Image (cartoon, rainbow, N blue to C red; front, side):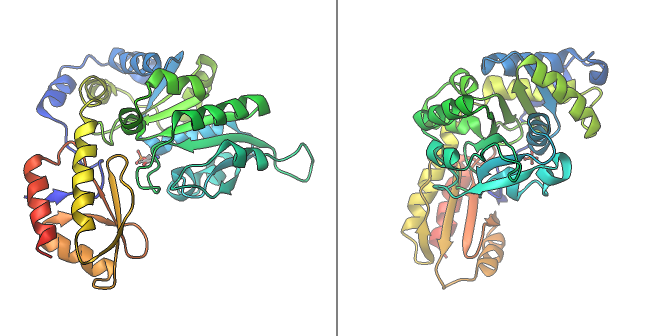
Length: 338
Ligand SMILES: *Cc1c(COP(=O)(O)O)cnc(C)c1O
């Protein structure tokens, strides 16, 4: 039995999810003829209290579409220096939108309204026009950290008062929602657009949804086509997404619980220098010099445990739907045996 903790993207559809996919009613979604895609889009929009939504193949695409629609070439986007849109989307802000990025340091991926305020460029021909702020919640590279609602509210108010658009990279927003106890509707109120991933903790095989007002989604649909993301009988995939939203949100608490147990175990082990705070389903820890990171990962793999490197001597593990109680017990045993 392989224990795969590289990411929460490694899950396979459950039997019930496969049945929902098998039974989906589909049509050609580029003609806007797919009733299941429409149902998913309406459901996601309604959850976040927005007018409309757009089903896309990946979270990179939903983010990149949002950057494209919210900016003009030459504009500047404000985000944290650990942001997925900056680090892990292949330079897409420049490639797709001709935008530059203003990177703010933060607290494990989180930034503050006061910092944003200091970094809005004045209306002067020397400076790029600041047009968009992107917030990531939970923060991936920040180790699954999440924002307090009050901090998001301040950021939202600042953006409104300053005429800036505000996008949420909510690849793991449901982990934050479960941990911090805010509602999707309350999150939707604060942002002009929201990207959610169905293929992370929610366990769908493919898909992300971009959520916003009608005009924004109309423009996004055009950009999705240009990016090559118009899909045909995508209802089979959307059915998995609907099933995930209906059945796999509340259970994220189990993933968080398991992550805390792993972190508490790691803290007691001789090869661990530091375990970063665990807020949701991501565990990041630092090895001391007993092991080089690469050797450690190889040794774990020989014990049938997969994790990923996350920087010098840093290891990341992510808990998910397919990581069972039995696997947790086995993992703890293996870690203690090292
Ligand atoms: C995974 C992820 C994305 C999008 O990823 P895809 O693999 O393109 O679906 C975006 N933002 C964050 C924070 C992520 O973790």
